Length: 419
Image (tube, rainbow, N blue to C red; front, side):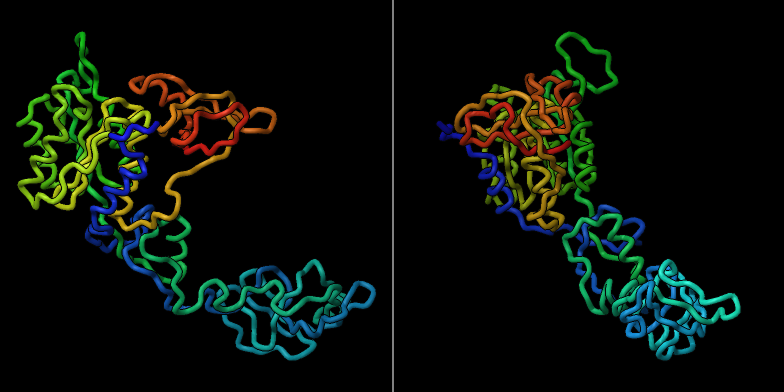
């Protein structure tokens, strides 16, 4: 049975998303070469046709397709070659019926033509009559031609706001002459680490101490998602110290992450701090949930302070990665105005290499490695506690077992969310 004290991850996420206003980040205008993977702030419409002229897609002869109808090797069409077209020039002539102009790939079609016959389907009549060709194959109207405006028509919206720009999108913008655009500013995400046992990664460990892993893991995930990570430091398990660190982070960030201090231990005070600070603002939200029915990630905390997401993450590295994908990534995407109906991660379909059990009522996130065998892709569970670092290193992605299932069978087809 599902523990009535805990929400399913999707229910918990909905509480956060419904409590913040989307696309609340400011805009900035940048050259397109600086906008790879940035989020578009406004729709982009073309101010011109693309291409601006009809052009050939092959080397050949531009002509009127009607003159080739019925042409074949045993009964070719005879066409007089009147002109030659050169790249980067506009033909200052027109072609009449039964005439043609030699044209290169990308060349502009002259008036009077509607198609291009490939060189491979043409031969010269004789060495003495070089201005006449035999067309050995008929062409249809617009064959081997990209029409004016076929790619983009003037006034057409080619990119919509909320789109995370890809390399191809930047190329399209350049193609229609747009070199500056408005994008959403990157969200600033503060990372606060708590724990008397946590020390910097370059420290020589004493017994009982653990090097900082989570700030590095979170920083990479935040950058990949389009944000700017700010490491606020490692703080002792002291209420006032943590509260002051959180207040400073809230005043200088768009999202605040607190790693550690989320379970039921006597020093785990993140939830109390979120509620306490919330009273100093509007007092409307504070902690929305404390704990989710998921493994790893059960102690997750979600809170809102003055419309800002303040999230408490478990301390184990595997739980950090899982909770980031479930909660933080969607929150960042909403703030940036990204279309959340589209997948923001890559997936592959694979078969389970072996069966694995799951507890009823709990959503399990299983780390898996992928291996191809006999032309099929198999997912091998990478078992281990969420505090073990190497389970993440060995894994290629995550398979989610829904709360209503009792596990996965060997050979069952699954969707793998790739890291």
